Amino acid sequence: MFKKILPVLLFLCSCGFKPMYRQTPYNNLSDKTAQIAILPVRGFDGAHGVELRNSLLNKLTPYGKPENPTYILEIALSEPNVVDYTIKNDGTASSYLVKMNATYTLKKKSDYSVLLQKSANAEISYNILKNQFSTEMLKNNAIKLAIDDISKQIYFAIITYFTEK
Image (cartoon, rainbow, N blue to C red):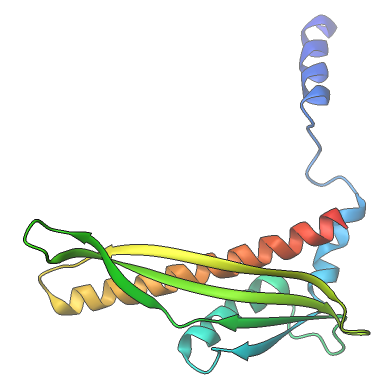
């Protein structure tokens, strides 16, 4: 029996397997991300900025807004840019592409030193349908997907920063 289990144990040790709930120094990531205050810089006036902010708040600070944040996240969000994506033989578009961009900076609140500065981009396509209402709904959904993609990119960049730190 031991001869059968030994190769499995050796394989798990050699492949970098780590138990999910093992206590590590990185278990306090949620404590660090919970200390981030999100400050809108530009582009948060409309519904898209509110949606990005709420998505990030849900990911970074699931227990509510911090009273005395340690870190500040400044975000500038561009308006959605809709361009022709696929062109038919007759020269009309058959699908559109929604492009969005957000630049963000993570700063330490005590001295405003820049810890992380990056940008996140999202491109989502959608088809043009005969029904204009359906096409508009697809456009709105593509914008929501782009915002969600940008929020995930920002979240994972911050998590990666704190795990590598």
